[in-house]
Each structure stands twice: as structure tokens, then as C-alpha cells.
Length: 273
Image (cartoon, rainbow, N blue to C red):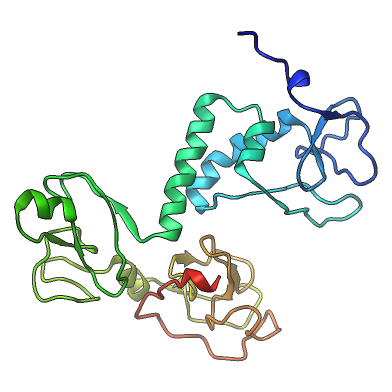
């Protein structure tokens, strides 16, 4: 079957009007043909392809699986930031079959991590099966494996924290009785160092915090006290742990004192976002 050319596949805008921005690569060459996206901006399929490929490593690091228009609005420094669906990006970007498969597998894994409490198990963690399991009760570390229960002929439960067969009383939210069963996140929060936040009078602030909204651990590198969580995208103050809207309007100080080290991981109520 003959393969259609790019020009036969898409409807191009040969002369973008004033409402169109330049391409993602900021190439304003008027001879470059662009396709119209749902945000009513135009994009060169080749620069869209290059942009998608540049996102591949970032997806793993940030956990973000949405596409947002990266170019700035004409005559401003403000980004368009409109969200594109993956179907739309896949239609206009010149991705190979392997690249499409990579994106789709990554998106499926990240979406499951965001909207479900799940882990992938292998034989060394769940003897007898390799199952994807969901922990529905986030206050209980004991999780029942239905496959192993059927195969063993008795109830089989394992610890979500140490990934070993459950020992001790249940339910419990802190640990099981297996030796070495500790919450690595809480241990990190307990033992991380402290720092002075740049351009402020905030001192002795823990370097690592759990996001007050979703619980993901975040390390403060530099710049101001406000941090945007890469998981739930809620911006909060790294010092007092209040949402930015509630914290002091001043970048140098907070209305509340520096919050102490966290001793629990916040549970994310996804229905509120």
C-alpha cells in the first residue's frame, strides 16, 4: 500500500495570521507549513516531533503525562499552555511505531500510579504470581493477593511496605512484624539535612518535604520557597507547608513559622482536585 506524503495527510496553513504563534522551536520561517491544533495555534509537524522526543526522558523524571502547548503567545512572554490530547499529538507528530508504543506504555503506567495505589509484583516479591495489585484501603499496609490465595488454598496477605508475606496483627498502617520493615519515605523525612532558603530569612528548613496534598517527596534545590508538586501540581510553601494562596504574600518570610519535620505521609484525596 503506498504511503501518503505529509502534505496529503494534513491540512496546512500556508500563511498564519496574527493569531498564530511561531513553531515550538521558535522558527518563524514563513515558508514552513504548519497544521492547526485544537488551541487554534499552528505548529510545524517536524518541530512537534522533535518536541515529543525531547519529552521522553522528562516523562520518567517528572511523572507528568499531559501535553501542554509550549510556545509563547505572540507579543508576550506568556505561554499558551493549552492542553493537547495524546490522540491529537500522535496524529500530527511524525512518531515512529516504537515511539508511539513508548508514549502509550508510559502514559498507562503513570496514570495507574496517579489514580490507583498499585505496584507491579514479580516472583521474588509475591511467590507464585506476577500480578498488578491495587491497595484500596490506604490506611492498611496488609494487602490480600487473590491469585496466591486461590493457588495456596488459604488467605495470602503481604506487606505493602516491605513486600514480604505479612507477619503480625492487622490491620496496621505503620509496619508489619517482618525485620527491617520501615517506611523509607518517613525515614528520609526524619534524617534529611536542613538548609537556608535562598533570598529569604528562612533558616533550618528541612531539605526534603512530603507534598501536603498528595504526599510525594520533593527536595528543595534553589530559588524561592514556593514549590510546584510534579504529581498533583499544587503549589505550596516549602517552609510552612501551606498552599501558596494561604501563605504570606511575601517571598522572604511566612505568616506561620517553619513547619517541623513531617512524621506522616499525607494521603491524596484525588476527588478533591
